[in-house]
Length: 261
Length: 335
Image: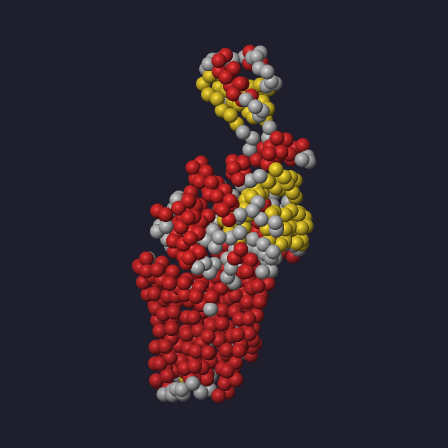
């Protein structure tokens, strides 16, 4: 309860600051929307030529892409921690975090949130409904509930990878370029995993669980029964990976060395 | 009375990597890196009673900040025991931090972009302070520190002195029984310093707040602390009253004289003074330096006699700083 209260305190503070810098706010939303349009156009162009990709048709692939945007928007709104190492470890901002009575990761999350990214949800839903209508998908009464569970599971799976990478900074403060690379790998989750070879598929399922952000949960809504097990594993995988990543984070905190002043 | 801080055999080691020289060295570093284990804090023990105001001093790199960071739960000790407010700071961090206030002079606790009062409001929620508690306590704090007119300004628009006063107020929102201040007066002008010192004294009297502060300013310590813990190379080299530290090590005063006309050293030495004075000539500035013991009215005697004998341009009285005391102790070995 306390954490929910604090979360909304920070959100309201965030809104206030954002409204003060109105032009920044609008530019950010526009660039976000632009980014997503470009991605969408890219997909349409690519799949305009190939109607089928390893048994997936054009609309199914667009649907997966649309679904991917949902957990991805949640992730980028709340886990904006790609510069954690620079900002919090090298500059010693972690000192301040650690003197406050809230879990350190939670503080970093609420300090760094970028709520504009939630506009990705709108884009995602537009694409999902467009592709869904083309495919003539029907919704059962429990589908929205599953949708929410899958989306949150996917966002947690995505976040856990980045939390682990951020935690590496506690052990070694040398700069790594893993973060941007991970953003690239993360994008693989928006294509059907069976187009990749077995090793990559295994990696995307059990090591860097990006497939649980896009393909696997989306398969359920597309009625791809051969993937159902993976679809229903999404919330579980999200939760397990997230728990493990938080445990790694908690271990890392003990190794925090602080920045000298 | 219970102890606010109990530290036994506290130690913190850091690995320090050294790189070899040259390209060949860089390649060898890839395979095996040379490192030394350097103890930043070396088996120190001390206790601080509730309500005490203690100055924690030492030269840069002596291990002050590292100790404070272990006491506040930021760093995990390599070994040793810490009990602060009856808790282990690192293990029970979230519960523990509710009972302390922290001000790092060189790092802001406030949110940069938002108005000071918004920062206070957020912190009030974070520390679960009720409205009554907040109003009763903070109205007073805000008045004493004179930050009322700053409340609606964003932190980035404040001057250093204004910001420090707000930082101090922010650290006290939950009225903690223990306050850590790391260089709270660094870079501040005299008036702000005085205000902060007065304020600290007041909350110590009013709430029996324990205060541990690090500083380079002897004035801070004289105004606030009866007890001084001095650190050098990670070890405590002095723990006791400020008075005896100064009597033993900071007793000499230096008085600088600049004369209108050239004066011979022999003339100065011939002045009728009832106590020994050592005269030194500073060739660079063409001034004379009188070193005397800081006892009774020696300074005023010296100045009045010199002034009546020779016309002077300028007089400066120089007090021994913490750094000089530390250096003195360091040069002669033990306390």
